[in-house]
Length: 141
Ligand SMILES: [Fe+2]
Image (tube, rainbow, N blue to C red; front, side, top):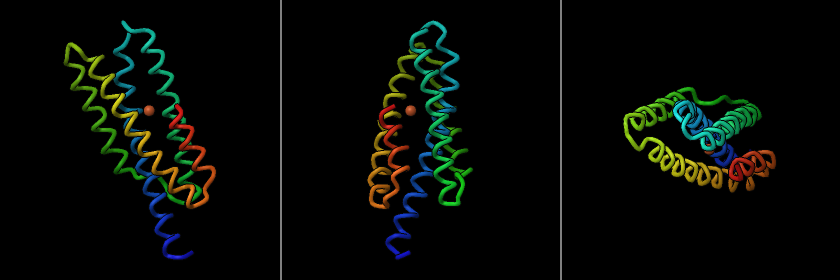
């Protein structure tokens, strides 16, 4: 492998680890939010659906990391899971909790799209078609 190929591969691995931590954070955040939505059944159903999509994406990312013979970063996962839980906890004390969580989720989803868009561009250069598919699927979700 050339040094530029190594650099691209390292970038991809880092991006996959970051995405895995991001999805772990989303699982943590969404799990806390969903149990507090009993008065909003349609929203609760959609959030539960997205929670399952998020868990599936986290699994797909683990598979991709395995193809590079590396695992997810436990430290990154822990740090982001903790901040996700804290955000949900703080909003839980507010009267407009559902609105605040919806706005935070909207911002988070846009952050995910930006992260996956950059990963797709790198994966295309690395000719990693399955990585492009996994990231593209998540952007559509
Ligand atoms: Fe998401």
